Amino acid sequence: MSDVFTISVPSKAEYVNVVRLTTSAVASRMGFNIEEIEDIKVAVAEACTNAIKYGNCACEENLENFNIKYCVEYDKMIVEIQDNGKGFCIQDIEEPDLTSPKEGGLGIFIIRSLMDEVDIMSAPEKGTIIKMIKYLGDDI
Image 1 (cartoon, one colour):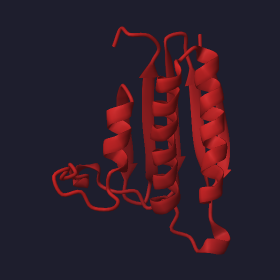
Image 2: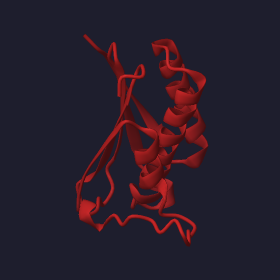
Image 3: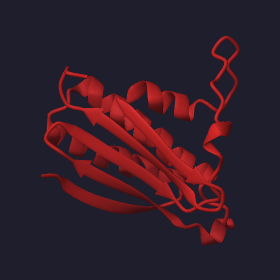
């Protein structure tokens, strides 16, 4: 049995903190520790930032919302960030060169390093969904 709910958020940077607070509250209620909650919040914020930056191709006055879906199960938290942007070819994601880092381009790398499972579904002109899973407990 799981609890599922979705929020729709304006594609504006000032709303990322609202999502971070919501994520923190859900993770806390599930029993994640402070460090795990911080990791989840950072990963979700990175995914939201990508949705805002790359997921909306409309002009500034006509930005679409993006959606965050939370699925709370007894042993894991699943968060999906979905935008309706241009999408991209997932094979084009490059591993960052950490020996000479540049600004930007680390979002997916950060998300993958903080969450237990990450699945990215995207196709040109179809938008993008980033699905992130964090398991409760030390089993994983």
